[in-house]
Length: 114
Image (cartoon, rainbow, N blue to C red; front, side, top):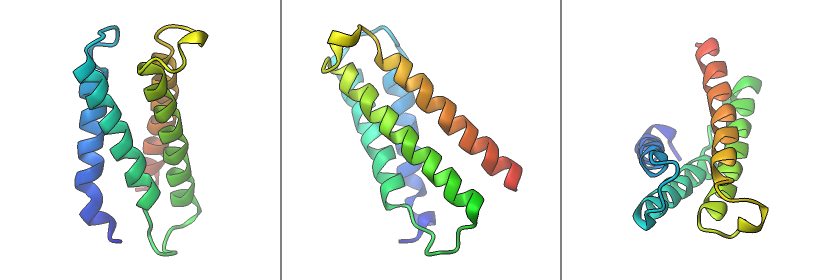
C-alpha cells in the first residue's frame, strides 16, 4: 500500500489524539472517545505501514519506535476508560507522556536523516 495515500490517516489520528488529550484532567466521555479513535487510527497507520523493502535501517527503526509508541497509547486508552484504575488514577497521562517521548525521538531521527 502506498504510504502517500495514508498520510491523511496519520494526520487525522494525530489531530484526534491532541484534541482528546487537551483537557488532561477532564472526564468528558466524548473526549475519551475522540482520544480512543485517534489512538486506534494511529495504531492502524503503523500496522499497515510498509515501504516494500525500500527502507534502510534507520527507517525501520523509526517505524518500530512508532509501533511501540502506539502500544503505549493503547495502554493509555485502557487506563483512560478505567480498566487500569487499580494501579492509579490518571495513569494514562504517564503512558501518553512515554509514547510522546518515543514519537518525538523518532521524528528527530527522521529530521536528522533528511
